[in-house]
Length: 181
Image (tube, rainbow, N blue to C red):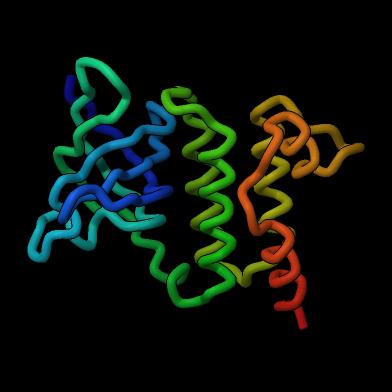
C-alpha cells in the first residue's frame, strides 16, 4: 500500500553505500521507519531533502511483512536550518527526538506525537535554547503518555515508566543553564 503523509525526520542511519534508514514521526501514522535507497547519492532528488529535523511531505510503500517501509518520494516543507547554526539548539533538538523515539512505539497512530515534536522543533529553531523548553517538552510527553503528575518532575515520571531515557540529559541541562549567563 502507498501512503502519503507529513513527517519529521527524527533519525538517520546509513544503509548500504548511498542509502539511509530514516525514522519519521508522521502526522497520521506515528513513528515510521523507511529505507531511502539513494538519499546520500550526489544528485539524488532526495539529497538535501531528507535530513535531520526536516519536515517533509512523504510518500512511502508499506511492506508485505515487517515494519521497514520504502520511501518513494519526499518534498521539503520546513528545513529548520537555525538548528544547525547553534550547537546548543542542535543538542536540544537531538535529545527531544531521541526521547520521543525511546518512548513511542512504531505505528502508534496518534497525531499528538507529530504535533508535539514538530512544534518543539519549530520553537527551538526560532528561540534562545533554554532548559524550560526541554522541561515543557518532557511534561507534554509525560501528559500524552498519561504519566504526568505535578508532584513529580516529568523526566522522573518518564524514567520510572520506561526504565531509561536517552543519554546526555544532565549534560544538556547543564549546558542550557550555563547558556543563560
